[in-house]
Length: 260
Length: 254
Image (cartoon, rainbow over all chains, first blue to last red; front, top):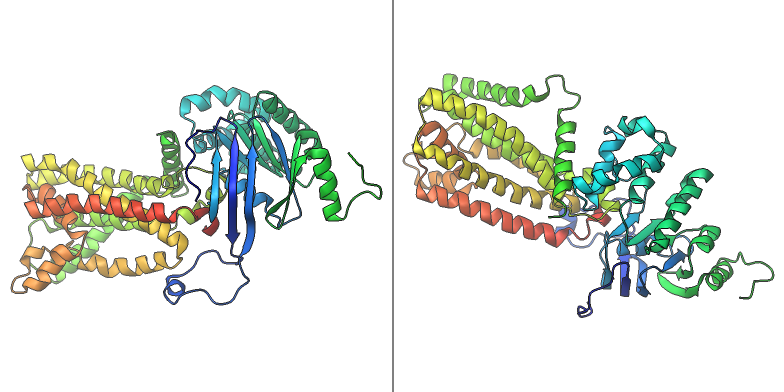
């Protein structure tokens, strides 16, 4: 652990310093007491280093796309930034309200109505009843659920589920928005609407960190691109160059790469 | 306390899911201890006729209700973090709200049972005495004790999946060794066994103290009271420490 910084982070600022994190790859997650008492679990592949000494400074209001092949550490980075997974080494610090969209509608209780789930999800982000009530009308309007807001979410179509999930996350006044590929699952109209809403939040000063395989989305939404490879930062810079680097890395570059 | 409202929401959610889909609903939580009480009354009050404790069904009932709160809280706390795995993997919030809400839901049922039982005890046993004022303190201490143990059990089970099976295997003999259908002070001539049953079992002093007040109308002994309060503090501190120590990796292990 590096010594604690005396200065506080500004809202919307992110600092990842020398961050490393490994995951053991196992089908079964938990251990048993016997395994602990007789020592290490035998066999199995070695732990995967999802993050290997990653240092990343993101200023308030920046828009950063994180790209890389599957297993490059993109989602791990996001989970570390969201404070869900701790680091093995290094530090992570974030300023202000962090809203992570790792999965739309994560934690929805299926027997509960859309409205009840709005309250539960707001509460998960530390909001009180009054704060959620103040946002309720906007959330319901954005989700386009109408009177279905009072039906149990178990009766929702997947599209309705996604719309509600996004509507909640988009109205939590995020200083930092962490988005993991979730927009790819909706239909085109939904994607456009979400992109517009995200652009609106960026214009209002939010920081965006977006993990995506969709180069077009990164190009439209992010000024800066970080390419991760094998848990390390392979490129960090303007999106035009970053995506060119990414395409070369993936072997999907145009025959004549666009020189910036 | 930014997450107070989250805790409230979790308790509501838990309550709803608990009572959903059961025809008898809330009534079940009264019927269950009554059935147990009936069975143990037949066994220990009629068949064996042990120490001839007056109003034996009530004597039993106080112990059974305390025990049910203890055991059901631990049994539902153990898998609670795994049950909410989707939430833990995808969102950042204080993880202790999950086991705490599960134990709180059990405490709500327990409080309702206690209120009913309290009225019956006061009427039948004529225990409307100053000692009764101690009851809120005792129940508060019991809640803290159960919460502390519940936090530890929940986070340990998330890491080591055999904690819940071990727990449920231990609870049955533990029940019979707890002073539910006997009084430790009736064990004459075997001081070692008596001391072990009276003080070796951390649940025993809670049962004894609540029964002293509710069934006996007397103050518990200073030693019992000290044990109850110290046990609550110790369980909270230790359970909290174990939870904090092991909660970091929860998103990875659940």
